[in-house]
Length: 407
Image (tube, rainbow, N blue to C red; front, side, top):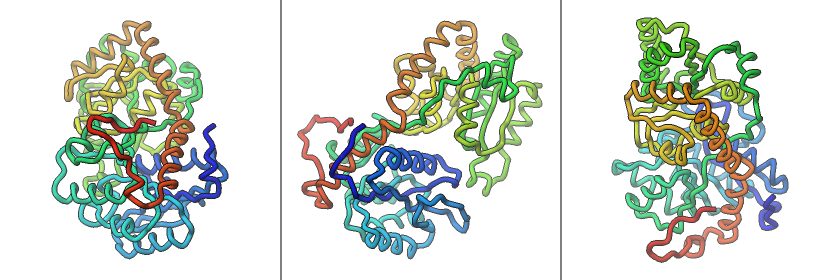
């Protein structure tokens, strides 16, 4: 284990959404903070959680401050809390849409009011930002000692679109939980899936997930393998449900009925625990992400699925292109049910290829489990704390052509 004497007795504060809020970044924040706390008990790790609107959450004790996204005064109070509680470093989780103001610029008031070093993890890097989005990201970059991203594509965008110095960028992959070596047969038995070939998608549901393309692919797969079952685990995204209710899910259900696939699709309409998610992944024969948008530099669900050793079929959004390299999965064109069907049949007909793909994915997963990712973040934190908040010394001077730091 990497242990930094420079961080003994130091205090690290995360800013981001946090469980039990239903949000991928909330899970990421909780997992990373938890991994750091477990491995480095002599370093204090706390979280300032972003709450949306008037929604109430029963946060764990590790959350010691709650910000209201739409209240500017809440950000000022949070800055005061950081200064008064002796925080040595802030790790900001940034995503457009979780902070209030124009393009989320409320967070800038907080960053401008604190003096400690800031490490920012960018969960989205836009290829074509509007003026406000660019302004906010550039302001965050100026206040951050380092910008952490989780894919090479995100690195390229920061360099080419935003002109961020390469020495300010660090590529640290998305972490995943330690995966138990679950027995697929036993997991299927626990879930009532014995005798089924299981396709799985999990995560918050919205129309940009492209689930209809898997539904449209099923008739051809079911014709060859009638025992195929497509399991969709997850609730409708809270913001989508707020705006249009269950319109998308109901449209899927209607199409499933039209295709006479009621026995071949199962919705698990709940936000499952990590243990339950691991059980579903262990039972899955193939994981599918049929997302519709290319511009996605990070997918936590994909990282977890591949890292758990599942054979994966995915559309070629940016993160999938990188994650499924080296035959760790199969890429299919966007909005192409026939290609999804053929990829499923290819793996069902060839158990050896299926097993080899799972082995390669599992080997990759061992390298990105949360304890290892926490170690990489801790090294970044140590560098930032040593440098202090002086940008002249905190940023790394690089010559043209040097790439980002990969730690």
